[in-house]
Image (cartoon, rainbow, N blue to C red; front, top):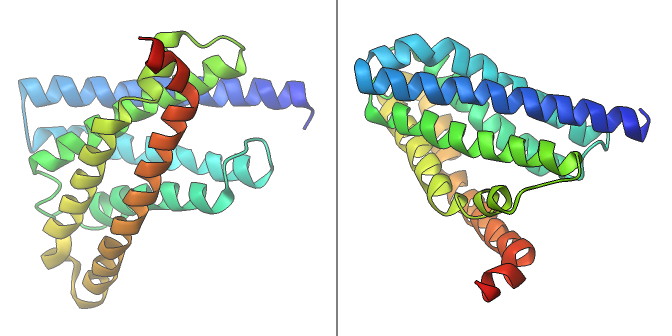
Length: 204
């Protein structure tokens, strides 16, 4: 794929992804305020699952070299979320996690993060990123990563009794991986923030 075609494809993909996650965000906020659980899960479950599944495209982008993201990191991040939407929300529809408040915080953490991230990437590819968007991209993770990971972990914990013996042990192993995974991702983002915003932060 030629560089110009690749750029157009990535701009399109990131723009579509930002728009799709906006749907998740507004649906979650509206339903949480008006109806609450279990209606938030019942009304948003399927569309959130498919929107998150669409992120598999990022693995393709990484494998083909269209983006610089490491393949292993991309696969890990995508599949950790697919575990939630398919392995919990779809496979264990009666899990108490699905109708718990942690489902709402999960959707909000994911959607806000992804709206900012995809919008930032699209603007970056088009050659102009507003400073406020750069600041959001490299600052909001301080709150959104912990709330997202906490919501994921709590969802898995609440689902253990529904999972059965073998699947339950698999989920327990997954829980252990969250500890080093979160540490590496969080410290990586802190370093990236210093790299991107370092000089600007010092002058403010």
